[in-house]
Picture 1 (cartoon, one colour):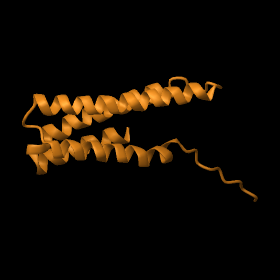
Picture 2 (picture 1 turned 180 degrees about the vertical axis):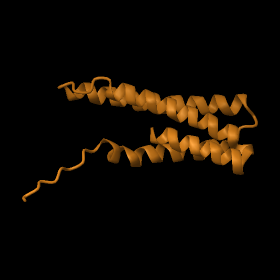
Picture 3 (picture 1 turned 60 degrees about the vertical axis):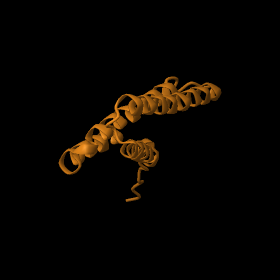
Length: 118
């Protein structure tokens, strides 16, 4: 969700300040969000399974699939749409993935409850 919101903000920013990069940022965001959704689906598909090896196998398959989607998608994007900026798409992919890595621990942690001694 955080990636989606930031991607939409980036699209609005590009539309206002750098319309020449709008297509690049839009397509890069589609690739990153689709790849992230695949990774989440694969890694958390068996959430709660008592066998950790299944979780690790799902996570590994998910991360490989995620980066395959991004890399193949970028190559196809750059080869099919010559007006798409390589720099803008790479920056978008890097920024959205870094944001997800930074936000994940915060978004999945449980707030510590304070015990009232009074």
